[in-house]
Length: 595
Ligand code: GTP
Image (cartoon, rainbow, N blue to C red; front, side, top):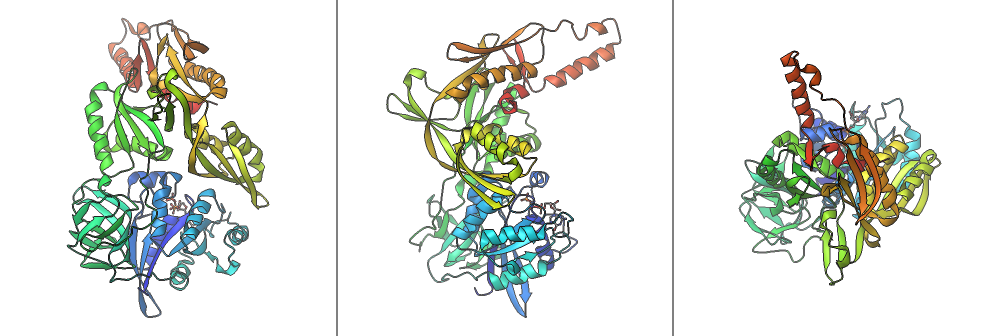
């Protein structure tokens, strides 16, 4: 065990985690230059495009130092708030962390929250400044920030360029000298932490784990502590560039298990893997059943595609256990599903994968959070959809989820960021200057105000110089009303929202204005109204078009006419007929675009 080092890399998005990992894989000859494609740890196309490591993976490297061979296990962590539970389990599997900070950007919110997790788990932290080859690198300033944050010495900070490879040998060496080896008893009952799992269409679920105590042997009967499910360890091994089967995996090591698990929900990240005959007494602390935070309806554009959509969602769920869905119907949109996501990015990814991997054209409704509705009959109902709200007379009160949010920004944007947070019903808890021109703000605010458009607004008012992170901090009583939208007198359930009473009038007015922009003119006037109960609070009108688009083609060139109709048909793809009004997909997301 003396020669094993288990570590992860903590970095804000784009600070160079994947690039640094690539260089380490090259310098330890885990991967040859020929095999090297950029960013091997991000193996989904979508991940590469979005530049975000969505699923954590692990890889083993061998490194000789002063004549002694070492086994390194690098556990990759996703860098986005939606996946913070996975990050916490990856961190819990390590003894050390490389803290990578971009020399041109300095410390950002995500860096700090993940660093706190690592410090709480007692990890040895190696601070690294990356991208020192860039002209805009502010190495001295960033060193100051790191010293302030960690209380370390300046000369403990390693300066590297993951792009050129400069400094990477020092990183490898310090992993040995500065990160403690694992401890544990290989003869004790098996106690291993599952920190990730992936779905493979040939082999089923491959679960990744870190052994804390005991030894897992190939063929053993194993049990997952929290789900109680039992399996046989059909194949176990190390993760290198490929899976390397082994006969046993001992305390301190990281490995994979394949055991006939078919579905991502069969194995839960954070669960403890133990031996069925000789189980450990306690599970590893920190297990949570992650719950979706954001909900939205997903409907096929073409009503006939409902069954195809169901099949696609089921397939997606095989490798994404955090996606939940249940059938839902909407008067406006027909049959579809109400889906639960970890956050907005997760929602975007699911929508994109449905389109790319399954060729499903879908309409997504406005995201909302899960409210707890306390009824006059003393029941508590989780409401995931505004149209699922019980009748007003049955509602005693409603609680909404509250988050604690942390924003780091430059001082020049402080005023605007503060105003944005307060407009979103935020309450300022603390304001700390990290350096003379960087400030950290902590707010509590309702999650529902974040899911709509907070992040985009934050980025635009701060010209990108603000980072943001949050965690759920309980539920709170909220004075909410259901705001409905009517088109030519017909209520469009998919456009309803639950909103704070004080904001409802302004919001209703803006929704009507936005919808007026988004709904194309048709052969007749379209009245757009916002209503709370029976009371209309705002109204706009889309005026009728006067001319028939094909009129000018009559008697003319027939192919030209066909082209025009073809073009119109295409334009209609993501349209829905609501009563006699055609509503484009954008309109269902109008809330996201309000100023
Ligand atoms: P996520 O996976 O999104 O968390 O990003 P990451 O932290 O893994 O960052 P990644 O390695 O993808 O690097 C982000 C960008 O910075 C890429 O375009 C890299 O090529 C670039 N980059 C990384 N390291 C360096 C460096 O040392 N110097 C320069 N100039 N660019 C770098």
